[in-house]
Every structure is written in structure tokens, then in C-alpha cells.
Image (cartoon, rainbow, N blue to C red; front, side, top):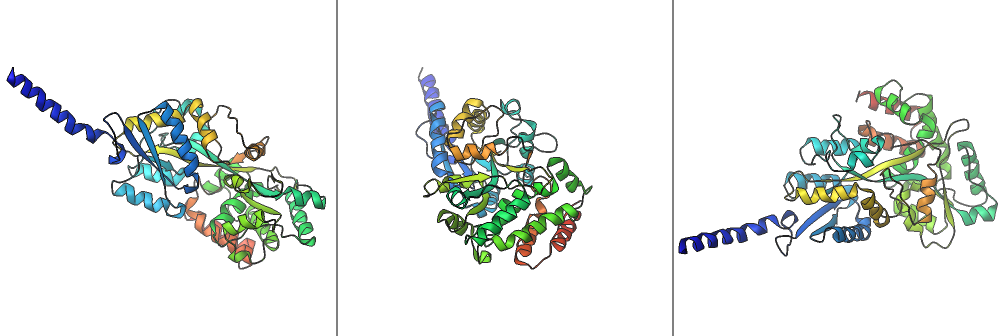
Amino acid sequence: MKRALRTIGILLLAAGFLAPLYAGGRGANQTGSDTVTLVMGSWRPDDTEQMNNLMAEYKKVKPNVTIQFRPTNPPDYNATLRLQLEGGTGPDLIYARSYATGQELYSAGYFADCSNIPGLKQNFSAANLAPWQMPDGTMFAVPLAAVSHAVYYNKTIFQKEGLSTPRTWEEFLTLCGTLAAKGYTPLANGVADEWDILECFYLGMLPNFVGGVSERVQYESGAKKLNDANFIASFQAMADVAKYLVKGFEAVTYNDSQALFSAQQAAMFMDGSWNAKVYADVPFEWGLFAMPAPQGRATLISFHPDMAITYNKVTKYPKECQEFLEWLSSPAGVAVAAKAMPVGFFPMISSPITLDDPHANEFLALNTGKETDARFVWPKLIDIYAPMNQAVIKVLKGELSPRQAANDMETAAAALR
């Protein structure tokens, strides 16, 4: 009898010793053997409040799971995440970038295989799964949100001056000229931060000149060249718009551009949907219109698959991570996420979602009847991102002709084929 009690005591001690090893995400604080704390990494510090709200809603579903949102400064995210993953300190749940950047981290063995997450393949279209899919069909993340691109415009100024939104690129240039003649700065965009003039402006309007998905894949394969007439025309469009940017645009940062539009020192701002909330309290009415295509061409929308969530392949808590991703793959979970996500981030699930913010719905309404596509370089040509960014800036500054810029792009793309 004593031997039996002694054995039971040893087993109980062992159980007490082992329990802490299996509680708490990444060794985070825990209050009991049934409580798990997961850490979520992200490049979106601006989302902290909203994501904390989302985590609070999930805790109602899984009371024993706490998810801590720990974002990184956006420009540092890729490098910081890579160092964390290589050092074994990566977060449990991870914001995953689309296409090649995410694929590379999966291939390196850091992202888990999400292919069997219940609801994932049933509730998302093939097009919305593709940005987070490997060539063999393996899914490395669950789609969370897409972002859109459009022209923010000051309705108060437009109404005062009797102006209407343009239907063609030619009308857009005429509108810019009219605003300038009336003493307004037409466009708040600058180039000091570099990325925004490429991602928000140039890639936002590029499909209007070169076409949508079917044409993009031809440029990727080399069947079409990035120095053809359509591409040259897209760079010419940037040259034509340069004189309508804010004076001294070379030194204007992204935050400066937001401030200029907010202060009514610029009548328009070509930007992304993620900034819709920034202008919630401005003392004027504003609206949105799609950057229009040249006359005779269809206007297309850059509706970019921006972020998904995956989990760390070596997390101590794969079950809890999978359960969270399953929730995000369900209509019920996405309905909650849609309300908790920042304004201007749009769920990608196939089921209908109702958004509360009128400007978010205005952004989505721009897609109606129009073809949408990801930013041109993301799917296959991400390696020409940097040279394209510099080409756009040099064209705006008058340092490179549209033809020279297009030739540089074709040279860069040809090296990848």
C-alpha cells in the first residue's frame, strides 16, 4: 500500500512539473494548465486597438485562450520576423504577406501547412486563396483582408467650384488643370517615402493602361513586354500628372500628404483604403472615385490581397492556433472580424459581409461591374518592385523619359524569365 501511494505521489509530482511546459504561448504567462497565451506578430501597429477588440471577441468563443497582438514597425517587419523565426522566438500566429514573400517563409520551414483548416477551401474563392498558395496547391495562410485604391476627393471644393468626378483619364487631367487654374493644389501625393507613389498611385492606376489579370500573366511570361506601347503610356501618364502634385513633392512624405488633404491644402489624394478612418473628423465632406482609364478602355480596380494569418510551424500550441484559424475561415468568425478590423480592410470570404462605415462601403462599391486585380508586381514580378519604384520617381522628377522607364522595366523583368 505504501509503495502504491509512493508511486501515485511520484506521478502527481511529475504531472505538476510537466503541466507548465504545456501552458502559455511561447512560454508566455499562464495561470493554469488549461490556459494558453498565444502571441500574434504583425506589420500593422495601427491595428492594435482593433485587433485587441478582435481577440476579446475570440476569447468569448475560447475563454481559455488569450491572444496578444505584438506588431512591428512596418518597414522592419520582414527582417525582424525572419530573425525571430531563425532564432526560435517567432510568434505563434503570424501576419503572412501574399505571393512570393509568404511562399519563401513557408519553403524555409517557418510557416505551417494550413491546407486542412476546416472551412478554408470551402469558404474562399480560388482567386482569394491563390495569393497564399504554393505552386503545388498547399495553403500557407488563411486570407484575412484585401485593400483597395482610389482617389480621395474634397466634395466641398468640388461642389463649390461646380466640378464633377472624371470618367476617363483625359477628363482627370482636365480636372487637375481646372483645379490648378482656380488656385488649388490638385493632388497631395509626394515621393519622399517612395513606396506610396508606387503602390498607391502607379500600381493603383496601371491596370487601366496595361489590362487586368489575363494581360498581367502575359507580361509575367514574356509574351508581352514591359516596354510596349501600353507600358510607355502608363509612364507617360505619370509624367503628365507630375505638374499637378503638391509643390516640392520630392520632399513630401506620406504623412505630409495625409495632412495636406486633411487641411484642405490639396483637393485630391490618390491613396489606399486603409486610410479611410484618418479623415473621419475632417471639417469637410469627402468621397471617392476610381482612377479612370484612358478613353475607350475599361476602368479596372487594384483590389490587393493584403494580409493573411498563419501559424508558426514550431509553435507549442498548434491545436489552439488551428482553432483560431478555423474560426477566421468561418462566416461567423469573419463577420466578427469584419467589424473589428480597421476601416478600409475588406474580408475576402465568399459569404456576404455587411460593413458599418459608409466610406468603406463606398470603396467596395467602386468594384461593382469592374475587373479587379492584385498590384501588378506582386504575383510574379516582385523582384522588379525596387527598380519600378525608382523609375516612377525619376519620371515624375523629369530625370527619365517614359520610354526609358519602360525599357528599364523590360530589362529587369527579362532577367527573371
